[in-house]
Image 1: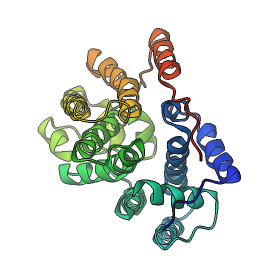
Image 2: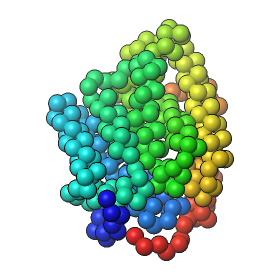
Image 3: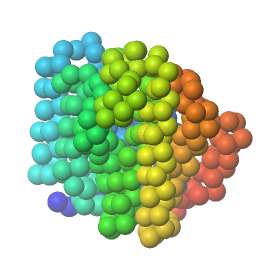
Image 4: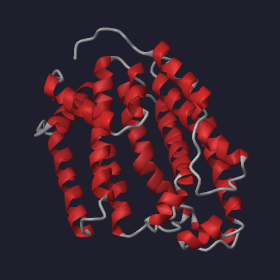
Amino acid sequence: MMAASYQPEDIAAVTALTRAAGTSFYRGMTVLSAPRRVAMYGVYAFCRVVDDIADDDGVSADARIMALDQWRQRIAALYQGEAEEPTTRVLRTAIARHGLAQEDFIAIIDGMAMDIAAPIMAPDEATLDLYCDRVASAVGRLSIRIFGEPTEAGRRVAYHLGRALQLTNILRDLGEDAQRQRLYLPRELLNAYHVPFEPHAALAHPDLPLVLSTLGDRAARHFDQAAQAMAACDERAMRPARLMAASYRPLLEIMRARGFSAPTERPSLPLWRKLGLAAQLWLLADRRAEPL
């Protein structure tokens, strides 16, 4: 597969989709050179599309599964050099340039499918870890290759940082998930503290903070192990990963500091920290002119 150039209309499409999502990801990727940034926007666009399919409760489960199956077919076609719209055309070039693995794209789709088959409610530990691997660490495995760190140390970063970020998301989004009858807390921990599996009953249980504290400690260990793995990687390549950790770990620490006493209240970074991250982005932005 030849590493063709990214086309302006395709760049514009994936950039617009990423910007419209309103997350910190769009600005965070400015630390990458333009070609690597476009590749990451392509990966984000793919993740956004399949996540929207999984979360569209206005469509039947069968229709959503079919839509994800169509994306499996598109990914298979990509590895034959076929692409039909902006996101897949960007991914085709990214695959050729960075050696992205087909299995990681499929893992992400499989993770989205886990949310469709039935509401995830108190999964066992193995299922939770598989879910984190599919929806977060698989994205990390794609990302570290685009960053320029296709090494075993880079894979360890993807493994641990993906799990750290996803566990932080789970702890942050308990209230929102409960509204959709989802509870991603492992049943082994819930059983240990006699917390029920039903989401709203779990949120009201007095011992829930003990469950959340245990899971928060686990997320913190993954952040620590990710940082250790980053130390063995190229410093420039790890800039986006370090910034992602710097954006998420403080949210985890806010929840840990308050003892998870308000599980339905989403934490937010104080203004001074947001300004600090913005300054880091500006200082680290890669302004090299490279052909797309």
